[in-house]
Amino acid sequence: MKHLTKELWFNTRTMREFINITPTVEELVRESGIQEGLCLVNAMHITASVFINDDEGGLHKDFDLWLEKLAPHEPVSSYRHNVGEENADAHMKRQIMGREVVVAITGGKLHFGPWEQIFYGEFDGGRRKRVLVKIIGE
Ligand code: ZN
Image 1 (cartoon, protein in one colour):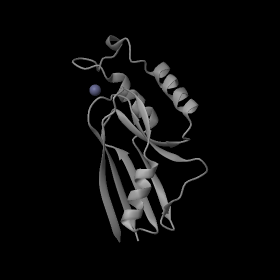
Image 2 (tube, helix red, strand yellow):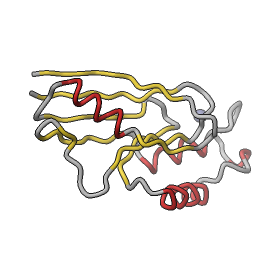
Image 3 (spheres, helix red, strand yellow):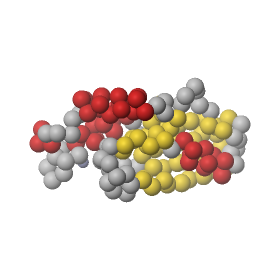
């Protein structure tokens, strides 16, 4: 069995951001040489997500507004978690958008459905954070 493990680093300038990491993951699949297998991509922080959806700006704005309605950042005093920190909303946004994705590798390529792309979702940015990529197969 072949395998490849890599940590990707992010440091967004804004508090919340969606980044398409598909090209980077595709490059790692190529680097692994794996033809048939599985690719796990997970956020290593509890205030960030990895998810799959469409790379469409309007949809990303809709996600952001929807998440802000469900778990508004302000007022920070409305959350019990916010004793000494102010990121309770980011924990909740991460929980909704998910921790990880697993994509099949077929014929040396990520086996996506139509329009599927992999995104890093940041909800408490402005500091260095990581995503783990683990690829296994033959
Ligand atoms: Zn926290």
